[in-house]
Amino acid sequence: MAGTTYPSESIYNLIPREEVKIIKPPRYMSKFREQMKLEKQENKAPNKTMGPAKVEVPSPEKYLQKHSKEDRSLEKKPNTDHFEEMMKPRKPRVPSKSDKPLMGIQTKKDFVKTNAFENIMAVPKKPQPTYVDTKKGDKFPLETSGLVPKYLKKKDYGQTPEYLLQRQEEVKRAQEEYNDYVQECMKQGAMQQLSDEERKHILEGLKKNWEELHHQYQGLSVVTDTTPKKYRKERLELEMKQLEKDIDLIERYKTIYISNN
Image (cartoon, rainbow, N blue to C red; front, side, top):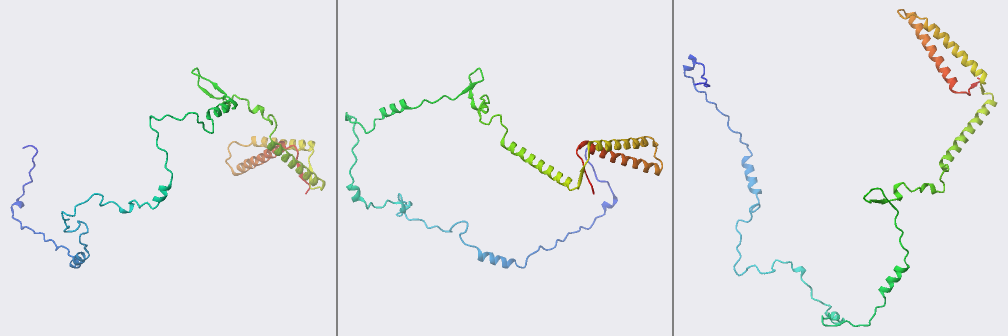
């Protein structure tokens, strides 16, 4: 049959073999087993989970009566104030449908006239301003829409705020103190201000030096294959960067002070 497999035949399978029985070791038994049984039997509480073994059946004479299981503490206490209740005046009886009301009796306050006077003397409410922005007539409050120029009507409109004025005064005061300090230092001879001619002369000299160094830098070889060429190129670059910083510093500040020391 297709799909069935048979084991390979061998002559050794014809020799009867002795059956090997596996002997299992004895099961482990704790030496405290008997002691635990005794303790379990002693600590076992009777009627713990299944209820009492024997329930006493009530006799037919002791049947369950009505309201026998209700709480007796909620029972009504006897009324000790019965005498006071009897001394109170009784309320008038409820009129019947055939009784007619007494005519001509008025109360102390005429509510009709009072309401009429209050409505006549009341100030009419002003309608809340609204605006309509749709063809269906949807209304919205006008005050919060941003269309009312309420900021133009403020008392301080168009004026500089107080905090800006205070800040300007502080900046002005700080500048005056700094100018006084600089003038005091100049009087003592500690600093000297450069004139415009000296500043221009120094600036022209720095630019001329930079042009000379730049001319030398352009004359260098393209290939720096030796150590002297490399050192010379780096030295020229450092000197040109320092001159550029000095030129930028002098061009940025028009007032320059130099220490006499």
